[in-house]
Length: 276
Image (cartoon, rainbow, N blue to C red; front, side, top):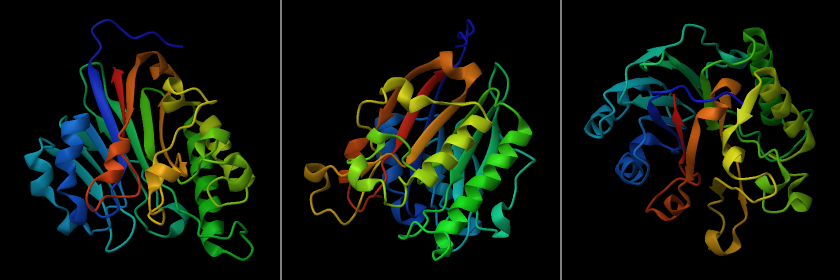
């Protein structure tokens, strides 16, 4: 594990599937009060670029923003207090033009930090690619990203975050036995994510802080009348870092209380602090 360089800059990176940035823009202030990130990656922004709530982001200190969105579906955005540049190797995954990935370089004193923000297809309800086109798309998407990752080689000075819509470990779901046949925790999805992670030699930063034998969730269904009491969660939101940054990890936060915010998302914000 690489050691932190002397004089490294503290950096807080957060990720949140906001489930409509225009509807939930007021909640960004609560997120800032709780986590105060320097870089915030959003998924499911659900708005074309021209309707993104720039004024709300600017008021919170996010003077640098790179977005890619579409009407009503998908969409990702990176909001930052620090200068950003869009990475040049963006792809149209599966040829669908559906705004599911944004790669940026964050300008830091120690050199640029790559941040990749992903929103992986959910996959529908039936875990069979032969009868469910949404599930087939999910597997194709992850396979394509894995090939792209392998072509780039092991990640360096990089962070990958987002709603990856897969809960790979036994304690990433409320019941492995009951969930193993449910989309997001099936063996084929877990194997696909494992190949993706290995292709970039990515390090699971959240499990750095919370051991794999402990429960860890970032999503609770809207369908649960009392989500906190039932606690049938899943870890669908992930934060990975390149191996050279593993030694720079300082702390994490899963903002579970955000699931109780008024008109909130079914996902909660997650944050890492690194010394980079």
